[in-house]
Length: 225
Image: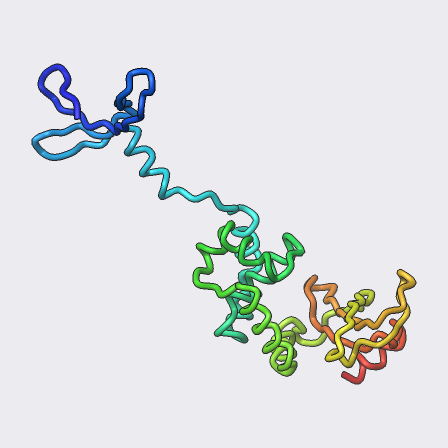
């Protein structure tokens, strides 16, 4: 504490260090902290500024905010079909679109973006997302019910886009069979069929088929499904 002109008292942060030359401790004043007044302590402008900065966080906003607004109708359908996990599905879908991120990184992108404010309390840890995907995957009837929202009245023109092949060496994936693809890779794979609505420009159907079935061979399967 120091006294200045006019009798005002000021509080400073000080420390003492050993001075070998003088053979005793020497006091060092580090910085000014507060002014002592009859009403109490008044912090310095620097201290007040530092405290205000603690409340500031920097997050990505533009892209995530745009996607939540642009896809609000789809998010609402997800909310209706999966009321318990719709936040996680929305975050996972959009973050994967932005970053092609593995599950372990979703929680980082969530915390560093507007999603953590717009969709609070979403459980996006790798374990939680993995459990969620398993629960969704074993209930195909629920997924089909969701996709029916995009078919319309059945008069829309549809287009089958080329197959996406997904490699898998897991013994638990029975659909993963040896198949041929454009990359000339003969590995166990699963083919993902996507059907796109040309009028609405949105997906209206998807189906997994064994990797041994070629593109043209999958068309009768779609017709039967």
